[in-house]
Image: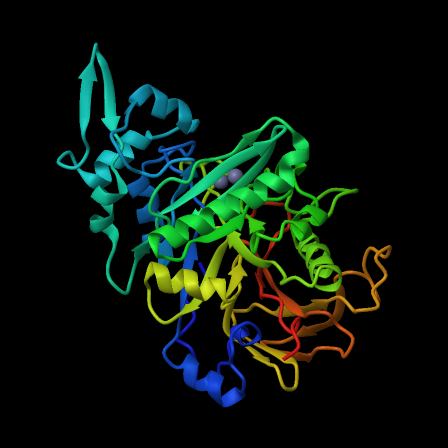
Length: 424
Ligand SMILES: [Zn+2]
Ligand SMILES: [Zn+2]
């Protein structure tokens, strides 16, 4: 378990400096005093769709482990309305030996809470709605549940999964039979999210999920769908090809290719990266929770404040590395990180970007896309953006193995957002 970083030190300059109108060091210092880091997961599944545990059990799992917020994001549904499930259906979903989901649920929540009925000799249990259970788990300033949906669209069978975080009503999915509609459907769904936000008067975050799941998205797709602002640079589901394969790039490289095209060719803002769990199994299965999350730098543990902070880029993605601060100084164009070290761990930080004279035919290396400008060790590192670079980002890798890896030899990591891509 990674300890929660301490509240923001005074010397903090937010990564958001690249996005917001923070014009000087001192201004950013003043603005950052009242901000805190909040840890949250925005992608989780429950019995409301294809997860195998009750929503209040899953939410309690996150709360018990020190998360500040979490979002259940079931496929094309919210936890609302009347829904009954047979115990048989739940047991089938569980696919694990040992106590059943129902037994664990009854033990933790008690018979007064758990609601069952018999229909023709079949026992069913009612799934509680968010409105019912949130009051049992939320605590102001300490733990927050944010309503979310994984809008699960498709084009020619290719999955286009987009999470909408902090929405009020279900946003319907789009299904097209034509694989050529991939970019069009993606753009339309994000537009639906934007319109839902306008209608409700609250910000809604849309992040595109697991681009390599069923190899649905190429980096060029992500570059060219202008509406998409966020994507999962890490998703804890073991089946989403996080590392790519011999011929196709992994999620981190997709990020660099898409952002290079966006900045160099399309004069467009880069994608920002989130890390999530996408957990489905909670009884020993391999699609389990606790693998990836975001650390959001916000003034309060409130849904709108969290989403607004993410929308201006004031957050980082993590699979286990905690940062005390991310400081981007637009004047000297220097990115500095302070790592909150784990016991006995050492850290290597790769400062990554693409030069304006990049050679698109080069896979990596000098003057390639996503060139590693420098790799520095230590708990406090900084690097000045080369004159000819289009952007700069950092990936911090710990010597520590991940507690619950989604791929072999996985280390704990953190990913900061791209900076320096806009003339200050
Ligand atoms: Zn998905
Ligand atoms: Zn999912």
